[in-house]
Length: 209
Ligand code: NYM
Image 1 (tube, rainbow, N blue to C red):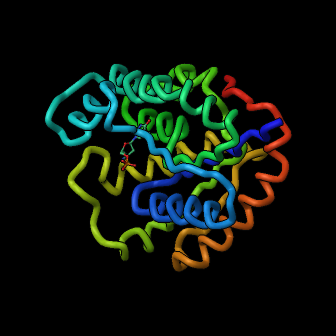
Image 2: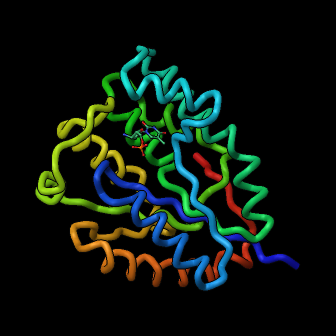
């Protein structure tokens, strides 16, 4: 019987080093002959992802609820792929997922956190969420934000406090991202091994209300 892959999600505010750490983890796992692949949300290459990209680049305007549904639809578009890969024994290291969806959308005025979460219900649930916590001072030292929508200090502070509301202690692993890349990577690798040893023999769970 093929043991299923482990589903890991990386979350956190912008500039925390998520993409670097995701890619380093995939590389390290493949070196150890553990099949693993990188995925990221939003996936800007799909039909829905192209609209999201235009929105983030400020080429188009859309109502907040509609944008939230597009980010969610982007995950639903790839839901069959996620399940297929996990069932075939490939571990997935996913750069942002439903938690970003809710933390960012609910940081806007008049957006209800529960309504945002409802759209995620039924998606495959990760075995662990590695949240890279970057302090505001370390974030400032890493240079200014880019030009995309949401890349503003005040907005990111709201996102940071929304993440705290979404924290599920059973699967949530807080990681201090103020440290150097290698120290963070070593901790992540250790955490992955703990999660992987349990996850492969359990069914894939789904996100619930
Ligand atoms: N973002 C990401 C959302 O607002 N909702 C979502 O569901 C997801 C997955 O998109 N600032 C936001 C967070 C980021 C932005 O992500 C683009 P990235 O990882 O910078 O490409």
